[in-house]
Length: 93
Image (tube, rainbow, N blue to C red; front, side):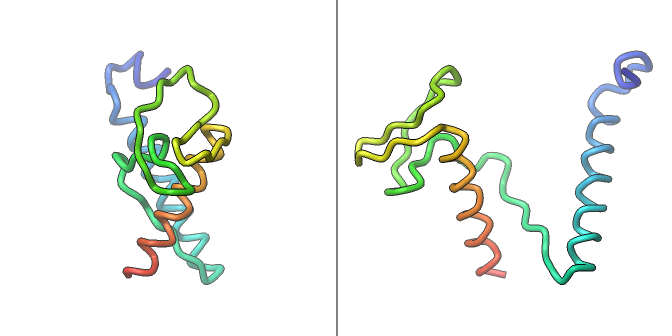
């Protein structure tokens, strides 16, 4: 509401997200863990978590079906891809 009423645009939303990620990284570091950020353009919804092939997916499609035979909920497939990309980036650092 504040961003619309005072015409700050996205800066208020961006600041909130930045504070959240900073706080999350701080709390994870206390526990001996690390926050890994993946690229916002990573094709998590278009990529098969089984074979790695990419295909266009409409937003209305709730089930991901790949030509390799893999079938899963679209969000579950995306979560696996995000986890795997995070692990890959962690191994590089």
